[in-house]
Image (cartoon, rainbow, N blue to C red):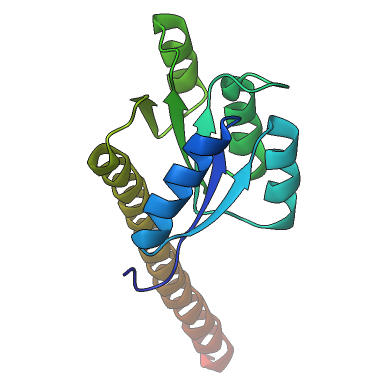
Length: 160
């Protein structure tokens, strides 16, 4: 069971695949939601921020790579994993260009899927920690500079 339940949006037009993925992921402690179309996925992403999005390449209303780009713009912190039964060099290159965190080919082995999810979440956590550290360093340096400036100004005022 995960410490804090991470949410995963499964975007897949095959209902059986959705249900299987949802059961697997919920068993692993994740919270899941399902969208059978790209439009529904974007609607759900407007209502809630997901930690991970599993995106099928072929959807009834949009290509998964287009959805990948839309997710990248609207929810850049979401880990985006392409899951496809139609792997091609072109869609793999397009997925990389549009910043997919991983690219998996169906049928996906459960351990490979879980590994990709954990790897993506770990990377996001490390990025967050690095950003947090950068903010701490900035605040510390800025505070020291402000204190130094104030001390200099105070010294000028008290020096005859």
